[in-house]
View 1: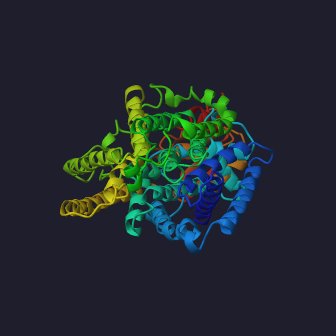
View 2 (view 1 turned 60 degrees about the vertical axis):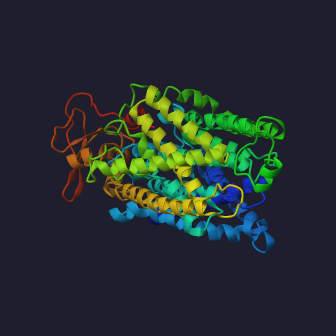
View 3 (view 1 turned 135 degrees about the vertical axis):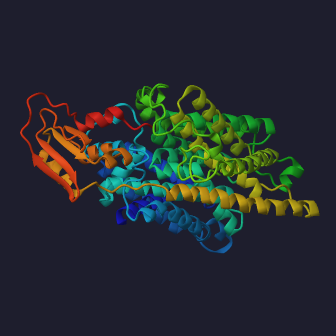
Amino acid sequence: MIGTYAAVLAVCASSLAIGEVAIRLCGGRRWSWLSPAVGLALLCTICWGTVRLPGDGAVSAVVVLALTIAAAAWCVAFLPRRGEESDTGLGQALRIGWPVALGALLAASLPFVVEGHFGILGTSFNPDMSQHLLAADRLAEGHSSQLLNQGYPLGPHATVVALNKGLGIGLVQGFSGLTVAVAILASLTALTAFRDLPPISRTAGALLVALAYVVASYFAQGAFKETIQAFFLLAFVLALRESQRDWSDLQLRFVPAALIAAGSVYTYSFPSLIWLGPALVLFLILSAAGGTAGGTMSEEALATGRHGGSPAVTGPAARALGLAAVVFAVLVLPELPRLLDFHSFETFDPNGPGLGNLFGQVSPFEALGIWPSGDFRLAPGDGAVPAVAYYLGVAFALALFLYGLVGLWRRRENAILAGVGAAALAYAAARVGGTPYTAAKAIEIASPLVALTILLPLLGLARRESQPMVDKSASRRSWGTVAIGLLAAAAGLCSLLALINAPVGPTSYSSKLSDYRKAVGEGPTLVLASPQLLEEEHGEPFLAWEMRGGRVCIKSSDDPKVPPGVRFVVLEGETGWTLRRVHPLAGKSPCPLVAERQARQGPAR
């Protein structure tokens, strides 16, 4: 528990401090809730850029620590705290942010509370964390790996290694802490859209967007890369929105979006641009067609025709886009060879992962947030809730989504509309040319934007010019209040159900296994585990992680036959694990090296 929450605190503190200073250097003059996203993007970029230097991650830890201390000192010294500008500084940020951060922390902690212990998230849903642990372990030891050589994006892994080297946090706790921190940072970033609302509304809106049902479901299976990518897409869209609102007169207005895009590449490689690239293009098209570069316009702007910024494709805005493109290119160019290597990864093969851990195609309606099942992979009616409840929830949320699209269109929310359009195109491409596994990821990455589209008009943030309230508008507001209440209750319960249903494996399957790993060395070893551990808990890759470094066969204890060449047998019994040495049978051992096997399989994402 201490290691997990220490990692949460470290990631959140570094992201907030570094991100805020970065935005201030771009010209921002008030506290920005894009700071968490910009900071995490820079954290992944910096850690990956330094993790392979001498020290095997120690340099990363030192650099991040130094930047965090310097950034925090700058924030304390220079951000306004009192007086006329108090609404732009630390005091107001703390008052607005702490309920959201606390709510996200409590929600993200539910899996550990329900299971009664801390450990590896999603072990019976998804065994991929075993490969992520191995990749991070290889980085921490200064060794190469197949994932590294294949161009697999390792920015988050490098961040976990920095936590390990700098604070002594274990790799399992580091990944768990990073996953929880992303839930908190995403919720804080969602405040960018809701900051002007009353406290209860903005807190509920931020949590419902950041912890939308499918995001919560991927959190439950430990799929941190997908939750980070969904976070970065949401933040990228909000950064485009802010570029023509608070920052419309800044030459570096698009640089925060460029920094987020760079962090996205180091987290999700070039596939991240499948969402970010079209979102930017659609934003520019909508902005040019509408005569302004997005965002809610004031009464004065509507009256005078001055829309708060130049067209997004000409003049100062074009120069600002050029500067952001340069920043993005400089940050990403060192990764270009690895981006090219990654194109042949198995995920991009239509005949590759196929269903993965799914039972079939996942319904795109799950992105609407009302899906009363603890397992997002189940079809309507396959669980304890009757199918009619799914259909009613989908119909209700779909009606609100269409209402939200119309409201955003009328208010010229070009950035959000562009993000939704890009997410729809990405899902269509995955559904037509990909696999059910990749299509499900597209649904998860889109779900925060879908929630934002539903909530923003309903909560009244994107309001039209001021006018006297009339009976009709009062009636409409009452209808909106009821709709918000029903949506918040239904969507919130569905997300909580997914989090409560999250399985949590042990931090390690046994401390004895680590001792046995040292004892057996590279000698061929047979691990005999219970069928329940292997089949229901996906224990095989995690046992391989525990016994990494040598040749290991893993079989069910129902089939105790010892293969040729095996010198040691590790057996799971009622009282724990035991090790015995056996006389090897003649013949070459079929047991592969753990690192070779796990790297060849690789994570499915």
